[in-house]
Length: 500
Image 1 (cartoon, rainbow, N blue to C red):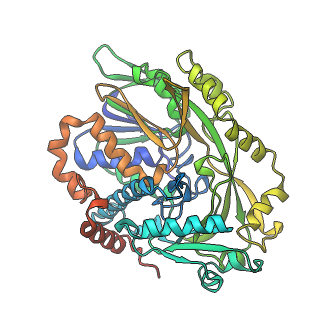
Image 2 (image 1 turned 90 degrees about the horizontal axis):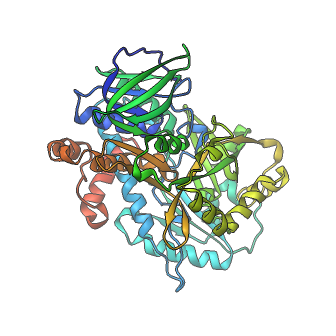
Image 3 (image 1 turned 45 degrees about the vertical axis):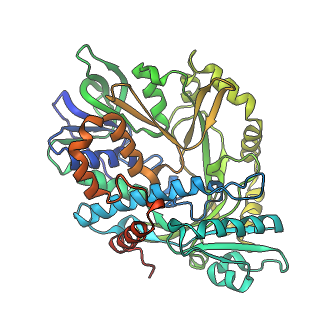
């Protein structure tokens, strides 16, 4: 647990980072490397950093690279498989791998195994139609340099070697198929976040303030942002002036963005989705599975609700999770208020929110069904992946809260967007990150987007440093097979990802 009671007497900083998660940590490290003379202050409402979405138990820990996530490869009406989103997601994760490798090489992170572990990524389906889909998906992906080496099998004996727990006592004769990539990873984003903040707080001019709640953000007459902060320990308030503000507060980012009054925030709303997992309590069962096995989502399910049986490595110990089971809460944060959703509704976004409610009945129905599930129904879903699963070996745990973006739309009135989006002011002096998956996996490329949107005039000066951190910066790996292979091999070695 990492916390700070630092009292910074300075009322003026160059950069204010709101939220103690992986996004603020990543941006802070980028800026510290690019502009070491800038003063940075970080404000986190909870006792320590990485306690919301970045916490290891609040997410699946998947290094999202589209190796196993079937929602990134939709099937078109003509039966072909669209891999464009999968390519974009994988490319983004390669940028994160390059960034993390740079930090290891510079001894900013001492040991990569403190946060990232090689774990095979698999896609598993059953039924003739789904098998045909997975076969086409494998053919399309395996031909691409970002996905080279992906294996495919319909042989039960081979599958039993790859995922023995999944194949135990499975009824014979059922059409099955699986893909496997040994390039997959499990990432402890909580540990990563703490490592990044440890580095930041050891540098001059950077302070971390936990138990500090940001109450308001408004622009001052001098053009700087005035941040009203409450010290929850001392119950005192002060105003901090900042030239640049990043709001990386997860589900809490929307309400803070609305307080800024920037035109770009108008019409934006949020739709919260909660999550739960079944966690295995039997070490003997945990030891029988080492993979992240993803299946197909239910009809009407949001993309982050694709069922998966996940090996996790948390604080050096293996764990096994299955889920997620989606739910609904009006909280925007796991430690938030039931009034978060009602308070986010404004005259400028209510039409978009009502339009989304009208047009997304399938999602609403799915969430209601998930909320009403009994434990036996949750166990039945698990037995699709682990036929021998027993209730006594699994416990229900509450994961993090996610808030999907609702935006105005000229035709529909409003649309529900999945994924993440950076919303920034026209002058680039303030930015907020909204949305969810793939989220933490793509923190580095998302923060590059922040740099491009908000520090365009500095990019020529920073170009050499950015290329040192991200060797593929300014290039596309998808169109450069040689560079793709070179950097994948390099990051595999630096991050110690050759499976042992």
